Image 1 (cartoon, protein in one colour):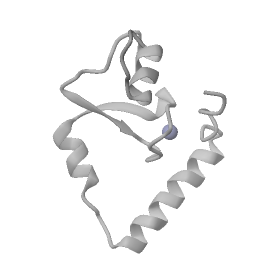
Image 2 (cartoon, rainbow, N blue to C red):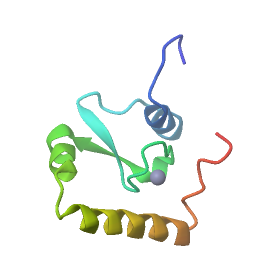
Image 3 (tube, rainbow, N blue to C red):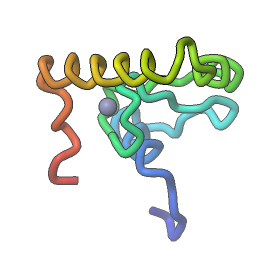
Image 4 (tube, rainbow, N blue to C red):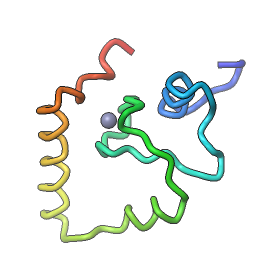
Length: 86
Ligand SMILES: [Zn+2]
């Protein structure tokens, strides 16, 4: 876009909102699925919020189960396949 490479989820944000995300902020994926570009899953966070969120809250097994649960929830809501066809 504009002869430059942009991160896909930031482009998704731009297409959805009509403006680029605040460069001071990071786009957080509520579904924790990095390649996902569903604008409904993206929100602007201050960097420190995202960093804090990235700190593991449990042991590896707990985190794995939580991320499975989040994907199952997204699937049930029918939003997980949104990025198909991009
Ligand atoms: Zn997503």
